[in-house]
Image (cartoon, rainbow, N blue to C red):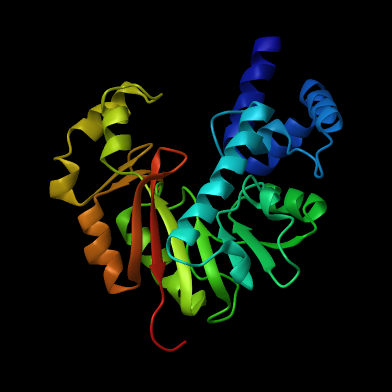
Length: 281
């Protein structure tokens, strides 16, 4: 009987993200760990439950979740400083694909002149953010454009590990949408995976099924294909994407002006692409 219950529970958790969230909130061990961790370290904000932490990354441990968010926010700052635009100089900032606020929580001390916004397809994560990260505004977006924001709303948009999971048509559609909601002169920053990340996957040094690796290894070199996308499961439009720098310059450069390409600039793994919207709004 226990085996049957476990199997049914596992199936429900795979099918319905909202149910995964509710079941995750019933984890008393994780709840106690989060309470003690926040209290002993005097954290300003609560820690998301394990089910939300694993939705934005494979590492569920609290200390790793917080540390990665802090490092990522620092990498965002450094990339902006490299193009002469300190983070505090922006007035309307959008974290596209914000998840449960892994990066956003580290921007709480931004000046009041900066308005912070986050959007994501994970409704449970957005619900949690609204309850606990009151310094920012959050919205749920669909898998496909458009976003629920007006034209030319933001002077900074950043997307961490979003375009690394989309197929090429969806990448182009979302790049057009980010351009739409960016102000003239505004910055659009996204991360990509390049040759460094691709080789780690191809060598099997990162967790992946044999079937996925076999499909990934059938591709030509990244420099020849420009962009490689391999779905997690055949037929899906969600998986892993890898970008060659020349593809980024040529294809995305048609939409936005490329200011800086920083290899492995995000947490020593993903490349950072810093672009600017030119012309009139």
